[in-house]
Image (cartoon, rainbow, N blue to C red; front, top):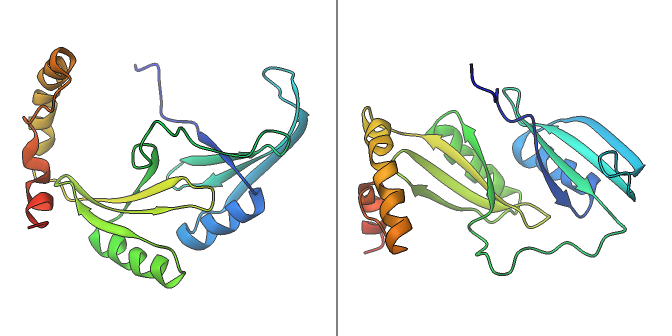
Length: 181
């Protein structure tokens, strides 16, 4: 039996808990599950008032946020490109992905994609806190995941030695990159 049974919740910082709840409810249909607020941090006992909200991301998954008003304003790791850190959610299929893209755009949200990753297609947008959100619809063909699993170890080993692009799985984005020309 595996030690881990899944992700209990993922937590991020937000600028405004109420605004964050409204955005995720309107954009993605996520409901507020519960809220916790204390004057001290339970794990460290530090005095630091906060609002901790938990949103239902479906299928037992939970996305949580902390509003911590006594801390310096939110920022991001300026040495990491904005596209790297993101939250990705699975949607049922391509129709759902495309319908959701249009609905988000009608709400005034800028949406990038869909991007073809061969195993799945994704759209991307940013929440009011600056967190990048990805919605992904699985499109994988039989045998592809098994092939990628076989390639993963050798790819990481080569990357570790060279710190140069390892092209063994380049087939994943051939269609996406060829669409640029």
